Length: 203
Image (cartoon, rainbow, N blue to C red; front, side, top):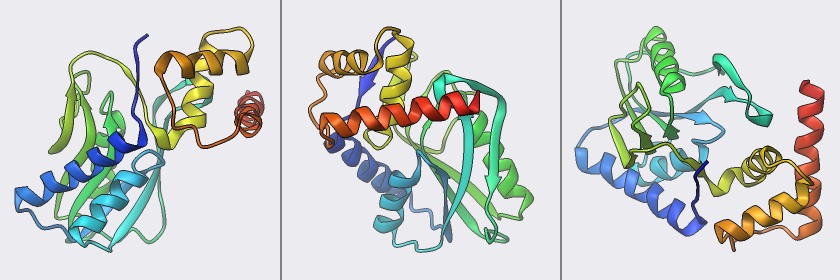
């Protein structure tokens, strides 16, 4: 399985490139809806660049702890999402299968959104959903390791390798050339242990 790690510098640069693409399109939006948790940082940057302070969050789970896939995305629309009659931009970090983005768009239409456009950092050609704005198209499937999901992704990739979790994590970081680790080794070990504990509780 191919894994591509995005260091913070590149990931943030892509967020600004996405915002510029939306800006250059000349489209105006009344509100931004972000798909949590992965889309939070890209959406916050896009909202800042475009000057849109009407900002809503929906929670979606598709890939669970341990790499489990739900039959369909579990989307939670938080109370107070007010998009009726509005032009809405939905932001996430990636469309992989496209199932999550498609479901969120359907729900927002059901809430009366006037026009909906979508924006992501990465559009994978495996996706059944084509976003309106994206920074990079990925023509073959890779696991993109975003820096804002550091512990979660490191846990899932390391456990797939088998063996001792912490040693697998250290080996993976060396292989990927990851240098921007902002936790000391002790806290990183504790973080990975917390994911293991949650996975065993989720059963």
